[in-house]
Length: 256
Image (cartoon, rainbow, N blue to C red; front, side, top):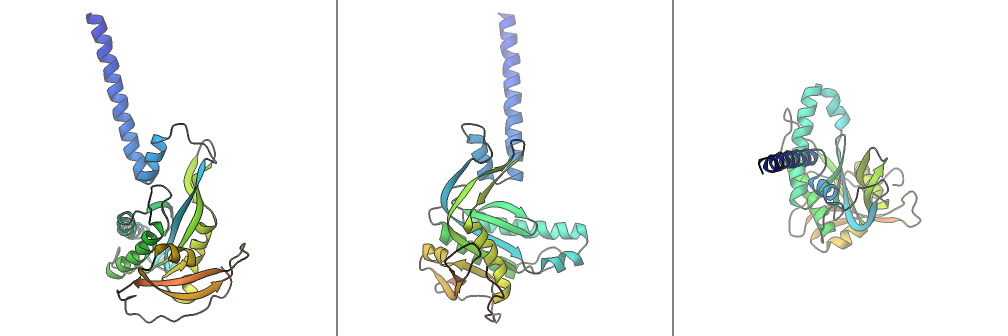
């Protein structure tokens, strides 16, 4: 009996230690990928393989800091990292509050999805609300050594593929599709227009009537036969748009 009890206690101790180790690994995992993605990996019925994916109707927000190359050149590496961390922490809080998931960090840029990793029924409206909230945060707060980091956003809605890409040894959970590319191109197009939030007609239509938008015209997109309707999103209905700065509308030098 003593031997059986001893073996049982040893096995129970090993199981407890393994459970603690697994919980620690899971907690560490959420620090490197979004908690929603970490939960998806942990709860998968079988091992995720490259190419595993699911087509979803979702919204994508791509944002980038205006003139960041000049900012990075003027800062010491340690100060630059502190500035970026302050900035990312502020934006992450806004994104999470509106149901978004940061799918990728790309230098100073963020790829954010809505309704891809977790269900967000009103994903288009949440994406536009997030873009506007980001404008409020970067207008109000200063980062690192007191820097103002204006941020451009592009928003698109439609079908995309959310899944794993890479090799059997190393994979990345991300999103792919036309809407991702268009959101990134709209973010860049803000520079030509002197705007800070541009969205496709599909995103604006899906978001409903709660947003103040200015039509920017139909723009040709590389790889698409039909042009894309583009809108500047200036605020919510009943709220004043922008931060009082004058904006000049200018046409893009080339297609998206």
